[in-house]
Image (tube, rainbow over all chains, first blue to last red):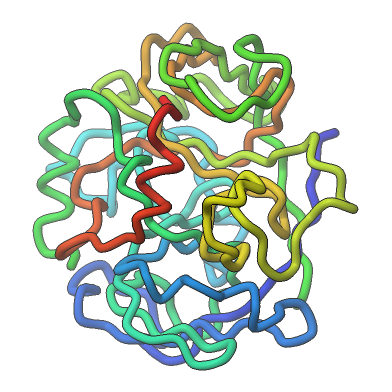
Length: 154
Length: 154
């Protein structure tokens, strides 16, 4: 088994129309779930959570620009050259993004979110509630560049 | 666009051979990346992180048992009936799992992890470093059942 076929369960509507690096924190968008695939009952109880985790695809990244080896994050010469699986950049194999964002409201099959770093029309593969028990266990260690690159992200 | 085809970049080896609910915290396993698809350079610098986020598929969940609406988590009658997108249960559309686990060691294209709640042979779609800047912004709110269900998970 070397390939998996997944269903697009919904799309991001609104928010930004172009990918930019920073200031995603206040961006609002709506995840519109596909009524042919999702029943309203599938969202029952989601409103009890403050945050959702969204699994989506960076669909606008051209396949020819996907990095198989390493690159400097954001192509910044002041940041180290690290492997594509050692960073969260979007030019990655499978082009998957996973982001925890704030859940603002739910209306039928529309989920209003804030701080989702995905542009208009982004295909969504899954939505999970953020459960604090899934936070990292033990002390978190990360290199300095990973903090530097997040400085103005939200 | 209603379907996406994704590459399986590796598989989980070792750890548990059967899915069980609890006590995943001390389970060690190896993510073996596919050398036909991944270059060693793609992991350069990953060892500077304490945790990785693994995106995988619960491949042993029969398609016929995928829940489209709602269910009680773990089918426990003491927990509320909530939508499949309001829980992280594995019987979900697309059967995707996303888990942050401890990174123990990297040897070539093998990544040793601890606390990954995926069984032997699980197909892996992506690996991202855990960057603290991607933690939830603002106060986390979750229902009581979500804490209850995680009581003995790790």
